[in-house]
Image (cartoon, rainbow, N blue to C red; front, side, top):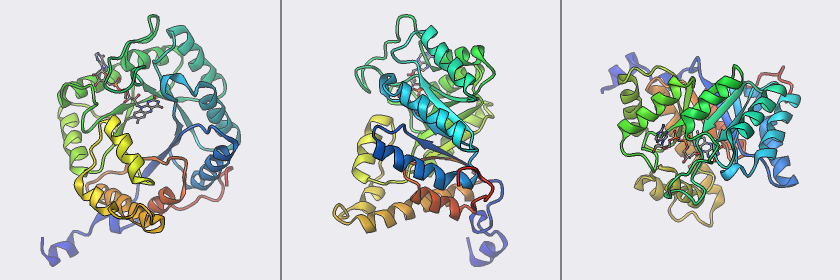
Length: 305
Ligand code: FAD
């Protein structure tokens, strides 16, 4: 592309990026100190007007009460719409239905429905609870039966660790949509081409719901690499190279993390992507800066300011 073409086709990310929607994912805090960090982050990010903020559900249902308490506090104390993550693991259908009803009763209207990891860890066989929902599509259908929830689900541009093929993953996604899901959030990825190729395949199958890219700012490269290994996300060599030699240099690491995430998100905007889900790790500053680059500014009238 020559310079004149650049002038006549400016990068969309260089303008005010109209129509950008963001959502933020948090995890329920374990300690009072973590709780304070989480709430500082929610209060910093809420004025940016996210479509929703979601709260994860610990492996094996281990954070059931903490997830509920965090989501309920978001309803009480902020104007943002919360989404509660929920998995099929270690609970009967009746127990899960009761949790879902409990969410409806406190004013939650959006659930992120997941199967959850096998009890013995990623890579082992998933055994549903004998009286439980057997997979995520069944959970989506169960939630929709309890009440008129908005249901989001996961999807994996680079394949779920258990999946036989991308085609099989798209079949799984289709099953979840047929059961009532209206949005998919992707596992994080660093090669935008993987996501864009996956998106083309999904659209070719006639699936038209939003497939929202999950973006993880690399707050900690070693932890991200370990997590990626389990999650079905690859760490490209160029990413490792960018963090090389920075183990003892947190300041540069943070600048690199911001640069990498900005580059990824702005490239996606240039490819026409307008919805983004940020895995915040309960920290606001990197995500806030990226949202600023996307043209989002605080709305002063928010309750949680
Ligand atoms: P699924 O859609 O259930 O697919 C996973 C695999 O299960 C498929 O590849 C396929 O092999 C098999 N499968 C699915 N459906 C069928 C079917 N109908 N028949 C046969 N086989 C089937 N985990 C948590 O514990 N808590 C969370 O809060 C959480 N949040 C997440 C949020 C996002 C956006 C993402 C991407 C993942 C999240 N996870 C969470 C991780 C997730 O629980 C694991 O990756 C889990 O192993 C798969 O659950 P799933 O719903 O993502 O995948």
